[in-house]
Length: 604
Image 1: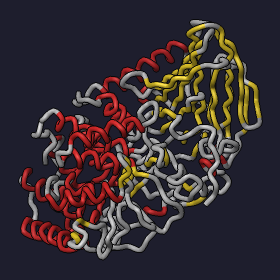
Image 2: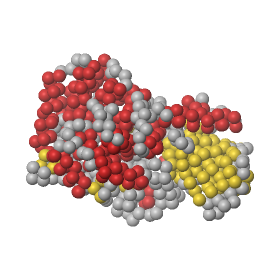
Image 3: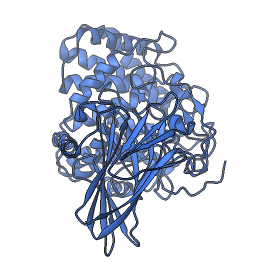
Image 4: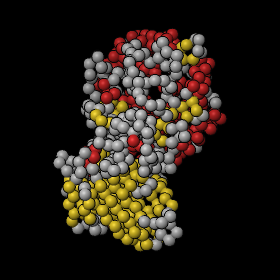
C-alpha cells in the first residue's frame, strides 16, 4: 500500500452545490476541485481533488492577509457562501448551480458571485478545466469578457465575467480589484447558450434560493436536530436526477476508503438499495414526490433473466448499463490513493438484499403516496416470485467485497422483507397475490435465519452461514422489524456489535479480511444505525450521547462521507447518500423516543 501524501484540500474542507443533474465541490479556499459536466456520470472537468497537478480546477479567491475563512450555506438552501474576513477588507463568494428549469435554456450553469463587504480587495481567478477525466487539455479562445474551452468530443465550456481574461496553457486567468459594495458575477455554462445579463442573473439567484427554501419548507420534522436533518435532506435531494428520478450513491468517484490504499470506487450510479433507502428517508420527512419518481423509474427497469435476477444491483442514472470498471492511471489519486477507478465492476454481482430494500420503498410509497398501478404490481409479483425461488443462493452481500459468494444473514433478512412487504401491500390494496405460497416462503426464510445464523455457543447472531463473526448490516434486523428491538437475543447481538465493531460512537461494518488491500475505517451509516438500535432498545442516554458525537464529526457545513478514520476524519466518496439517510432515520426515531412519543408515525 502506498504511503499517503497530504492533500492540499481535505475531503472535509468542502461544501457541495448542484442543479439536480450534477454536483460541484467547493473548497474553503475558493477552489472548485471536483465537477463532472453536465451530468453526475459525465466525465469530470475539474478533478484536482484526485490530482492537484493534472485534475483541473476553478480557483476564485481574494488576497487578504491573515483572513479568517468561514463557509456556510444560506439557510435551508444548497447555495454556498464562503467569506474571507480580514481586519481591513472582507469579501464573500456565493456559489450556486442552476439547470434549464431555472435558466430556461442550456444544460447547466455555474454562477460565482463576488461581493466585497469591506475595504478594497484584489481577486485572482484561475480556471483550468481538464476534459474527459483529465485526459484532454482544452484549446482556449479569449474574447472580450469571455473564455471558451473546447476539446474533441467534449461540450465546449464558456466562462464570462466583466474582467480581462488571459489565456494560459489549457486555461484562463484574471485578476481584478473591487471595493466595498461592489459585486460581479462569474458564470460558466456551455458555449452557445444565451448570455445572462445582470437582471437575469439577479433573478436566477433569487429563484434558486426560493426553490430550495420552498422544498426544504415541506419537511415535517421539527425535532431537536432540525438543521442537521434538513441539511441531510437537502443533500439527498441534491443527489437526485430531476430528469430521470434516479439517485446517485455519491457525487464522486475515486475518493479512498483507506488513505494510500486501493479501495477507490465510482459511486456515480443508482444503487437500488441506496436509492430505496433514500426514498424511505425522504418520505419520513414528508417528501412523497421523490418516492413517486423513483418507484416509476424502478418499475421501468428491464428484467435480466433468472440467472441474474429481475433487477441488477445498480444502473446508470438513465436506467442503462453501468460503465465497465477501468483505472485512470494518469491520476495521482487523493493522498496518493491509487488506482482511481471509474465505472464499477460490482454491477455484475448478485446481491439479494436489494429486493427487500426496493419492496420496502414500494410498500411505503403506496402507503403514504400514490397507489401502485396494475402493471407495476405485476412487476412486483415477478420480483417476489424470483426471491421465493432464489433466497438461499450464496451472494456477494451488501458490502461488495471481492470474496467468494456465501449465504449472508443480511441478504436473507432482506429477502424476508421483500416477501413480507409484498404480502402487506397486497393485503392493504386488495391486490391479487398467491398468498399461501408467499406466506410459506416468508415463514421458511424466517425459520432458516433463526436456525442458521443464531450461534448458541457465542450467544448472538453471526453474519453468514458457518461463520462466527459479526457484521454492521445486522443492525438492520430490528429496523426492518424482523426481530423485536428489546428481544433478549437481539440485545445480546447488539452488545456484541458494540464490543467487537464499535469504538465509542464509531462502528465498523466488519472486521475481517475481505479480499482487498488495507483496513478501512468506521462506516458512517452503521454508526447511525447503531444509534437507532440503541434508541429502539430503550438505551436513550447512550443513543443521545452517540448521536451528538456523530453530528460533531460531520464537516463544517454538516456533510458526511462514507467512512470515518480512527480520528473521526472523513474518508470515502462525498457527500454520501447512505450516511445522510441513516442520519435522518436515527434522528427522527431518537427525537420521538426522547419525547416519549412511542407511537411513531412511521410504523409499518
